[in-house]
Length: 117
Length: 112
Image (cartoon, rainbow over all chains, first blue to last red; front, side):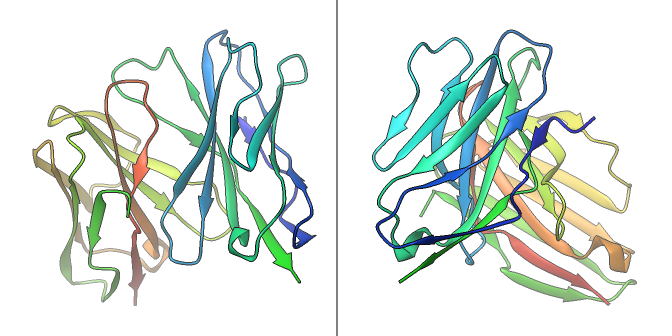
């Protein structure tokens, strides 16, 4: 069963507007971590933001915030004040903390965000 | 610049060739990973090394052979690949068991 679902293959947003990228996940574990990565055309995966399952507050990193709704198993990424440089693929990922020896992430299929003038 | 360097950036090879992908991390991390990224599919974890020991082989065909001589270097040796192996191969590293991954820019592999 797919563990990370990103239902939006592509999104458009106007510069300076906010955009929400959806992510739902499936796990039976109580302890897990959720990540968002950005992949520009250069190919490199850039870490954006992290939310732990026990974190009380929604994570924020500059213009990025994570709308974490544990009961719904959703971890949507909100980008405020979009910039042209935000155009990229965005991946949601989950780490289940019982996996043991090293940090294995399961990724979604990604959302391609295009920021327009 | 994430501190993870992959070479080459692009590679074209025939099905009978032998080539190697190289990854080097300058972050002092103890875990390194190979991921495969195919079009329209989620990233697939291939191998995990923790303190130079392989801790995960995600049912990867034997035509892919990883090597981790030390905590800073990771190789992926390729031989007799198939056209469906064409993909972006991403290397990553992390510090500790539960830390975020730092990725390289990847090697775009085309198998003819």
